[in-house]
Image (cartoon, rainbow, N blue to C red; front, side, top):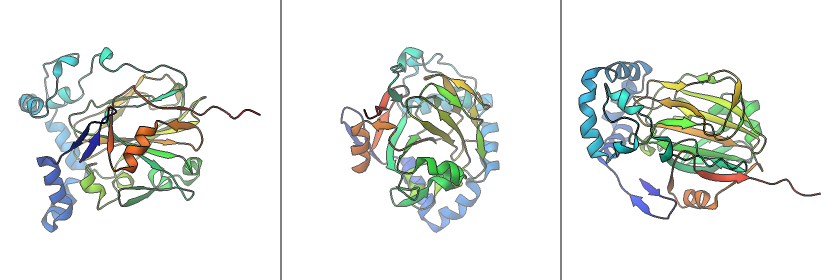
Length: 293
């Protein structure tokens, strides 16, 4: 894994989980196990187990091994693993950039930026995607030709709540059933995880940034995506949109051409093969001013 924070500090690592997933997706025996692990019923069964009091016993070691600072969260004692996983962070720890012309990150995560070509295609590493397949709607996908796909990959140690990136009017949520591949890059190297995984999205119509597609993608052992307002309504920047239960997961933003000027470091880092570490509420771009007559 190659990460870079917004101060330019680089981390290159491969932990035991990365090694296991690489084996799972690349070895013959691993792929046989994979056919079972990605099925929805497995994630649902794991979700049941992780809601039990017994599962709370795993929390202390996980916190220690992943160097999670629980003091920045609203509570430190948990009744189950999922109670720990959906813990809420103190508001002052994730300030929201409320300037009207600023687009914010919807979540904590590792961000990569990808240009959407004239035929709606974009590539993540060596895997090609189309906006149409992602959304299962060719007409909507065409709105994003020439724009950007922003991939926010959340790992198990990240904060798993997410928010709206701007004020606007959201559409009803669209749910697309699928399987539950891991969102670890080990999987993306060999399959189109963002086309195959269970996902939900809405369209957020804004004054400053055009219409933004906001999508949540489930992943291995993520049995539930919880969106708090599934219907059409008005929403505010920084307002909680929802949360994931246990596991890594992903949020995708699709931006229309000419509506947002992304911060240059995010584009440069992606071009150099790095995911950029971002936090919910921080600036990732600003609206493009209309050209003067």
